Image 1 (cartoon, rainbow, N blue to C red):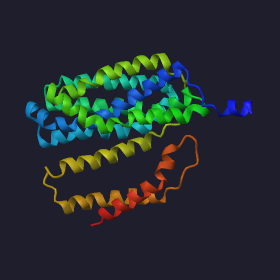
Image 2 (cartoon, helix red, strand yellow):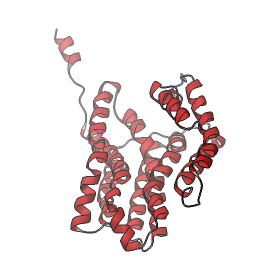
Image 3 (cartoon, one colour):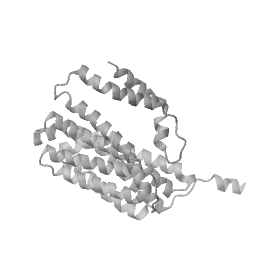
Image 4 (cartoon, rainbow, N blue to C red):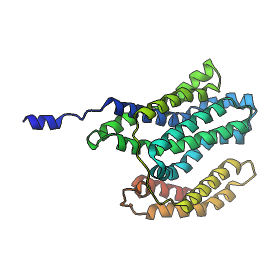
Length: 286
């Protein structure tokens, strides 16, 4: 009975593991925070920087674009160059880009800073779950993921709230400077609590990554610049329909990939993404 009771006890998490978990949650928190915190700052920065409608769109959307483009290759680069090193590098890039955004004197400079922010976030985000797996034993992993997700998941909710307070009390530049102390704390805790995973030789699909990047950039550019270029809605749909049809049919026909190093195959084969493929296919039909 004593052995059963002892085995049923919750696994203990050491202070070093707690430190690493706080670092990962902090990095993921600011990555999600910068995705939504800028929304309320749009009127202020438009007035101060004299940004056009297209520049405002790029200021808001460039972060998510680069984040989406870099997540897939960054996961593989983490396998190659050590996930801890990639996480810390991405957090530092995100903090440095936040400084650039905060001191921007023009809309072009702000957009460049947002691109760099997305790059840093795209580098650090895919490393977080891998580092949790390296930091915690299997018995404590579920608990750690739950704590990490509950802390980081609040960023998308409180981002607009924090942004509103900072804009009201300071200025729109404050929504970028708030990232810096959190990033510094995440790096300091990461240096102390995150394990070194080493490096190994992995296959990197450069062609597929470039193809996905070109397709996503072309689609977003069309959505943002098409109306300003005088494209008619029918012409825009005609241009997009073949691409969307091809992507959606690929999503709906992609089987689940049973490979420990291919999580994106399982995502592509998931029912929610298949449903979204059908929806986009129907919506894009001329």
